[in-house]
Amino acid sequence: MKTNTLLSLLHVADPNLPIGGYSHSNGLETYVQNEIVTDKESTLVFLRNMLSTNISHNDASYVKLVYDALEAGDFKQVISLDTECTALKSTKEIREGSHKLGARLFKIFKTKSDHALLKSLDEYITTNNNVGNYAIIYGVICFVNEIPLNESLTAFYFSTAAGFITNAVKLVPLGQLQGQEVLFSIQEDIEGLVEKTINLDRELVGISCVGFDLRSMQHERLYSRLYMS
Image 1 (cartoon, rainbow, N blue to C red):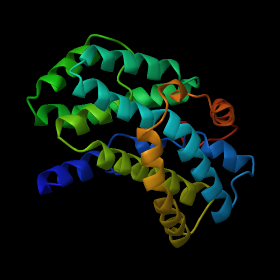
Image 2 (cartoon, rainbow, N blue to C red; image 1 turned 90 degrees about the vertical axis):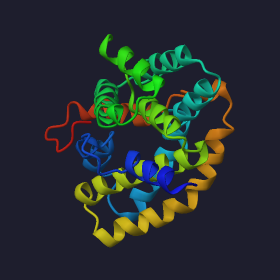
Image 3 (spheres, rainbow, N blue to C red; image 1 turned 180 degrees about the vertical axis):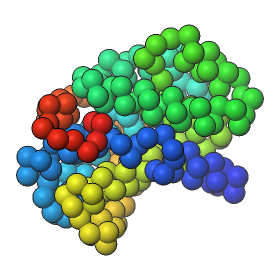
Image 4 (cartoon, one colour; image 1 turned 120 degrees about the vertical axis):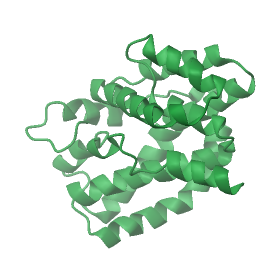
């Protein structure tokens, strides 16, 4: 991987980007308040299940499908994928959060290249409401920066895991070292998750993860909340 490509990947996948990701737990807060996630071990179980079922069949797969569409020169398919991705997010908070994160990510990177795809994406976002899911925007930006799909997905999984762990350290709570131990364990899974995503049957993309969806819906009505989702 070229140095500039590596730097681009590190930048776009940085979990500390100022896009508001830190304010979303994606239902984890409900699991903690219901005493399902209570320690390092249950955090690891939650995260492995989240990555291997929900993320792999949804957001990560849409990153891969964006690459497929753009390699075929089909930007209309990217728009179709974004619409599909929105429709499959059954929880209001998750759906709105995905659009907000996507919009903020795009705002950071759209002026750093005059690539025609970014201009087309900008027009699509500015002329429509409730569009531009994070996974779709991430995929387009990585593609424009010529980041290989394998590396793009590897960083996507790692960044997603790091974000959940940051939330778990605050919510459970976990010690900082315990959080890093969970992250080390997750790193062992990422190569397999990337391979699974690349080879996933198209008919399985968007598979419903009812348990995660229900906890996310319940989050809207928690008595007290630290996170937006």
